[in-house]
Amino acid sequence: MSPIWSSYYGNCHSLLYMMDASNPTQLSASCMQLLGLLSAEELAKASVLILFNKIDLPCYMTMEEIKSLIRLPDIIARAKQNITTVEISASTGAGLATVLLWLQNQHRINPSS
Ligand SMILES: Nc1nc2c(ncn2[C@@H]2O[C@H](COP(=O)(O)OP(=O)(O)O)[C@@H](O)[C@H]2O)c(=O)[nH]1
Ligand SMILES: [Mg+2]
Figure 1 (cartoon, rainbow, N blue to C red):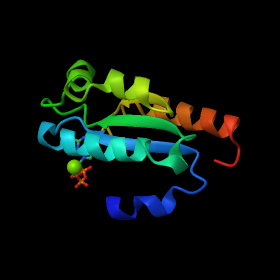
Figure 2 (figure 1 turned 180 degrees about the horizontal axis):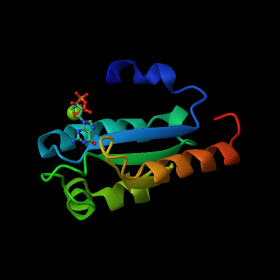
Figure 3 (figure 1 turned 60 degrees about the horizontal axis):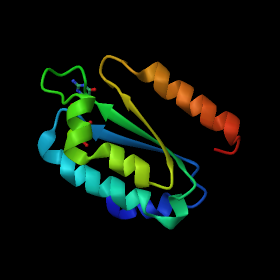
Figure 4 (figure 1 turned 90 degrees about the vertical axis):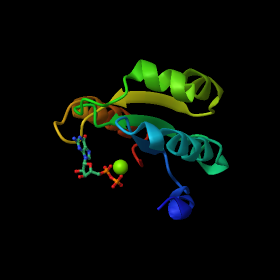
């Protein structure tokens, strides 16, 4: 789907980006896609929530591992956007409350989002 993502950039205030924390082989490609999004001019003012999914699986990478693998602190420091991260499981619902709070906050800050 990524080739058509840019058609949705206009008027985008909040960006949720899901990464599969159980799939190390996909991580670098996923990180490249994220860097592409973060460097898009139209998304410069968007708030970004990165969701690390599948933390219920025994093979999931911890935040510490992911941070060092993709140099996440550098990405966050250099990005124009305000970036928040959350570990979640779409399967068990872990982290869902944090995601909903984040969305609620975004809506409060920017009612049109
Ligand atoms: N255990 C577990 N499985 C998940 C989770 N989220 C999605 N899946 C499953 O992972 C499989 C592949 O989905 P996913 O990686 O999300 O999408 P895809 O990579 O675009 O095919 C599907 O069977 C989903 O039901 C999760 O948090 N935990
Ligand atoms: Mg997948």
